[in-house]
Length: 326
Image 1: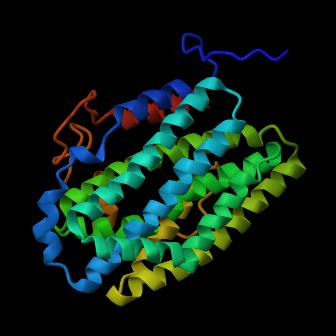
Image 2: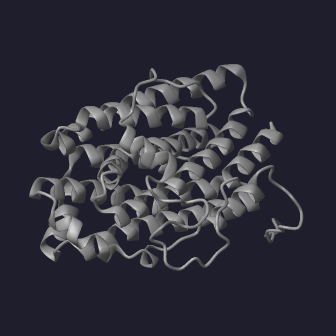
């Protein structure tokens, strides 16, 4: 008879679960605590094309977060044995749902019901968005053993660390120019979450990969490159469809490649694409939250600091603790 065990946080069972539990809880936030209504005036100054692009990228992000929170993380954590790591993944799944809800908070504040319904219909029918999401989902639902589990972990990291970023580009681009700044702050909070999600799942992958012989490792490595090529080709098509009308698709593709390299490094691989100069406005938003200070406080627009504020050395300390485990 297999006994059902309770998670025991008094005894360390994972090398890094405690680290990521602490970091996730420090970063906890809610969309309702950021006053999106202050963006209304800025929203009205955008052209109809700019509004349409903004709503398209947010609806696409909503779809991806819905997939990750409802299918991805639950599928992954169901195959993880360590109960502390399961707990961290469960917390991350909940945050993905908060991310998905956050986009609706932005929509409800800025757009009409007709616009909202139309943009969600667009997401449901966009072939590039649907295809890349279905590819990821196939690997989540295809977990049968350790090998297919590794494939699902790779797919998860690509989603967290790469596929979201074609959507993140435009909110950062606008916020960096003083437009929709509070909505941009929500995106900054989301990207901060996604960054540690990708690292954590990547560490689980690296641990799982080490269980295999050299030949199987090579198969896994080849799969990672093949999947990235497939997903990047879809990202190119998606970015062109969404951004061509405002002349930004070229910049978005570079941003996607930049984050694809981060995804590969989260998995323990070398960067896949060559180094390129990224749009400085967007890169500044990604690396430093634009004009917002996300370390000394939740952010300049965050009005309910309910948990311990983040300090500037939090991420440095996280990196040190991870390095000590190697």
